[in-house]
Length: 401
Image 1: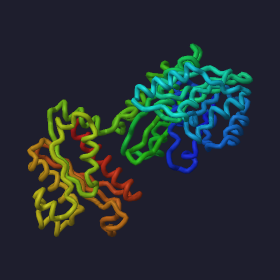
Image 2: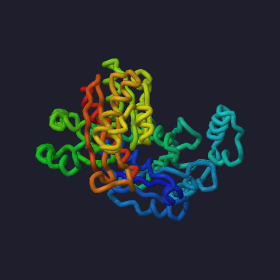
Image 3: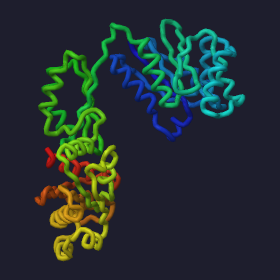
Image 4: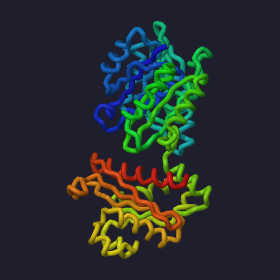
């Protein structure tokens, strides 16, 4: 069984939005071992949509289409589908009543454009939409299933997972396990080399590497009988793994701090408050997060954190000495168990031969004992700030273990 995904919308071709619907559908199908051979983006144009339906490869058994089922002028998918499948659009009173009731529930008056959603192809199966007014369509032609879904992401996701997949997946399609190992501190090529022997021993496990500014993700897809092999890999890479699936490093830090009943404060220069922002993204962060100080200037470092003027003059703001004084200063100021600091050069200007763009010094002061860490790699300003933040949080997590 093979699938193709067609996403409809001018906004996908203009670059205004990313095709997240295609990615979501593909990920769900892969969980059920249904390979996706192609993902297409097509504009709101009848000829283009028709051509994409006409040119489906013979090997494809299932076609998923998203977008263009709404009430506006560019929502033409229903009309195109009806024509392609030789079906008439017929007004269906029960659909009209349903749409009318949903609008009444919203407290919004219905207009003539909304009434168009009650016209439905007469020879296709309906797919319920529990999150909106656009009903999905299921056609069957020449041994192939065609599923048409709305383009609104939460409506599409609900329709796919609640209506389509339960009917589509038979007992012969065992659901694959999907697990993502989130790593930091080891490059993609080095990860591959360390895993190469394991991959050769387990060819039935699909492996994909996803390099990101926050680290490298390793996505594994496997059947339950390969669980032991996956656990062996996790053990092998344990020093590099900071989380699993969608788990972020700040979530691990939050759990550790709450377990220890510790609090912390953050003093940031080059990261501009990103560390404090990520730490407070976690619900309940008030249990451990006390202060976040962005001490960008030397004057702020001295006045707010007690950094010595002589340290700034002798070593410079971007130095291990100043990083240590910042971390200890914010810890003492806030009376926390932990203080963490960052000072560096995010670029693109400000670097020197001794301290190039991409240089970071960060420090963790834990119960009065400080440790300083160095990082240096330049990508661009935005990426550098993300990488600085991830590096500092990884070092903080290591101190909490």
